[in-house]
Image 1 (cartoon, rainbow, N blue to C red):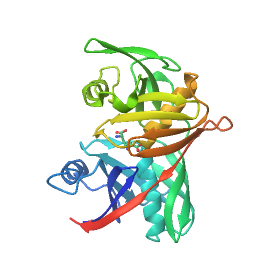
Image 2 (cartoon, rainbow, N blue to C red):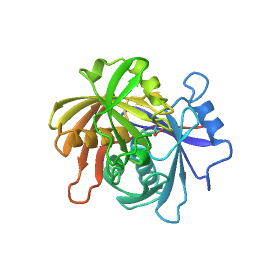
Image 3 (cartoon, rainbow, N blue to C red):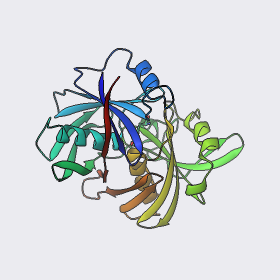
Length: 276
Ligand SMILES: N[C@H](CCC[C@H](N)C(=O)O)C(=O)O
């Protein structure tokens, strides 16, 4: 199998193009190939597949073998891949995902290669049961949750995949490894959840560190950055356009008042190709 190793701000993926559909055993394959000691190593495997509704379909398998409904950093990598490898010659590309339908991507090109992409990530889903959480409310904002005696307050946002945003004193030095997995698997989240710990520095700049569902501590999370911005607006902490700064770098996020859609702009890079 030929693959291309790519990343968005260090959130890295094994990109596989050319399959007609998700291969059988894709979960076991992802667990094997994502292992950073015995195989290629990555946060996930991304399959670029044909689509009837869009230019391409993207399916994402986390490093633990679970399939995600959506992935922001991966969609920028996929857009870069299909443009750079001449599978499409348009700078506006549509990608179908299982969690957020057909999404538009505008790529920015330099010397014939994509350097950044602006992705329409769709409208956030805020209804508690749809995120999903066990909270039946139109919005789950600043909601109490307890895990092993420690109390937190979270805001729930789905971008197609579920997110729980928690504001802390200093996200950059927060003990992600202790609290991330406990919250990821908390019974309040029926399909587990991506956990974002955020510190708002100004109305246009937020630090965030992420513990990802099915992948653990990644260097960046595109959907997590979108969920964080939406949460910060809902909590009155941020403007609708802001930089969300992750360990791997910065994403520019806009939650449009006009169409209620979230736009994410950031880089994508190709590192190497290989055969496995
Ligand atoms: N682990 C996530 C999928 C990848 C999301 C993240 N890498 C992004 O850039 O959005 C989940 O299970 O929902």
